[in-house]
Length: 499
Image (cartoon, rainbow, N blue to C red; front, top):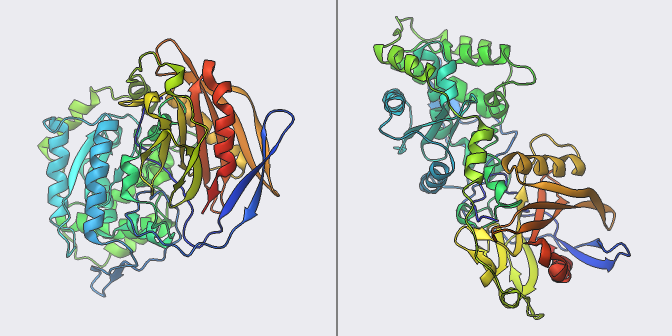
């Protein structure tokens, strides 16, 4: 498995949630049966930078207030993070997104044009904070855009292709600028009490094969990014503030909702991802119409010559689909040379990893890669190379987008992995694991091993949480060695305590 950065939907227990311990009793079929024992509610609070921001939080509209003149004033909403922390999150996330996504070069005329519009809109954004905005174009066909906390904004090439005029493109950018100014991402994270999910998750080490594909389930390729899936109240605020930014920049603010309405009209089963990530807050058109009705009438700017030139240029371009982009990244799998089985054999003596979200025992001759507050890989030193993991276990979290049951959530995770890795398959059927009245799920996967010429076997265990997310463990080994390591994997699973 390739080591990869976990970019999406990490979901580890929030402060105040019950801790649980997994105990094992032998199953005659060779599986593991576990019972959950409730532990005391954790009072420990980890002070860190949250990066898992894909939340459909029901926050109320308190970030902007409209004066009788129609102008909107930005009011600070509840947020556990400082503006400096937003900027640091954005800085590190941008480096990872730029590495993982097919982002056009800064020298691209398309990028420079988007940056030109973005700078003009930013100059009209009401904010006491000087956010270091940056604008990027992703060579992806699907219609989408997203903002990273602190200022970085990404727009898919397909979005530019879909716009009818410059004002519609400006509307998309103004909407995303508003999300940054209003700090919706870290605000939603704060309201969901996910403060223990740190910035360090962006540097967490995990595998490719089954586990590593998690890095491609979101912001990578504009699907369900950790910086997307805003609440409807957040969307309403971004619409309103975005319309004011457009008006001040000379664009018809109604063009923004006009573009959104166009996407909805063209929706259906294949609706643009933008609509999923940016849900209609209800009466979107009427809300913006009422807001801008208080502005003095003025003549709005028409399409610039630059728009006509860029529009003609992007019409000839053939951006990648999200699936094609994911496949290209998955092919960049590094290889590990031959490994002596003695160099990866567990010692039989165990030590404990005391993580902020869980506790687990592991062989004392294996190492922990990652951070004690992030998703981690536990592996023998010889089984890990730069960018690849051949032996070990990945522990992290996953937040499904539409699943209503454990079966559906696990299936969503598995199918996403398979779409990102054409060489991965499912071995057998999912099996339920009884957890003292609750259920977890066990599933075996196969994929290409980073050891040349070897196939890999991955044991995926998913455990549901009360917020509809999953805690997952993926035990990794080449098929030839999996049975030999399985007792160690089961012993590690027995020791797991979820905080």
